[in-house]
Length: 305
Image 1 (spheres, rainbow, N blue to C red):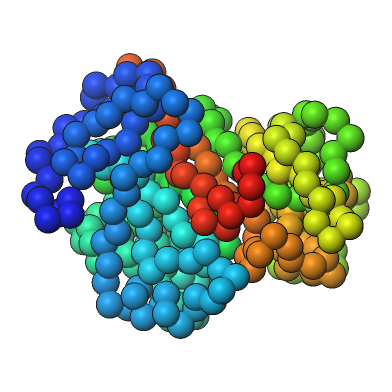
Image 2 (cartoon, one colour):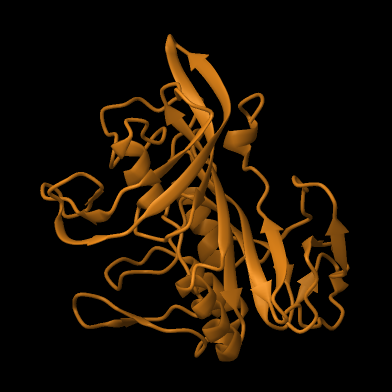
């Protein structure tokens, strides 16, 4: 593994020596403790030809996409990445587009047997090397990958027991009436569209508990319409939870083409205006470790976000 032009030094295990701090890696691979809540990590890309070509094919002036994830932090146990918008986490067995899983297999082939594969509707087993959780295709931001099966099981248990803390940033339609709030609405499948989930009464299938806290960061006006920048803190991890919850309170996420198809994209967004900003994990010894994916270009282009 290379850090720029220099060979990375031998890494040690964060899970074996956890401290309660925020971390990033420099090009040398050494750990730096950060006092600021909003650091700018020095990330690095590992490129393969198919990802480069994919980027060229899919990128346009309104999309903040990249050919591969950026490494935020890495040691012998975990890999923390910043996933670009437009990149799926793993394939479905029917399409050929690159995914985070493909990137992992190309750059970390030793992780092939780490994790749990997923079975699609055709009964095909889809590899998910080291993948503990997912982000939607058009959501950018921080993800954690396990580098050993032991750590995978350790992280999986943390997610199941809701010990993992995540924050997101999202631009939504409309002005919020309060500075903060909580959304407690169970989520089930939509009656009208098999692609959608719903937090409305009468949704079909099992109604699963879902909880999202939000905090208002900024309100802006564009073209006579008001928009709000929110910090979101989900404590459950349902499919499309943030998108469904915000639609349920009549503030869908900007440029959500599935849940708000009739609303115009604004602020130059050509993709869902949702970014996974931070993730906090418990290392061994119950020490908290917090990692951050800096705001991508489309978020930073909006003054004050």
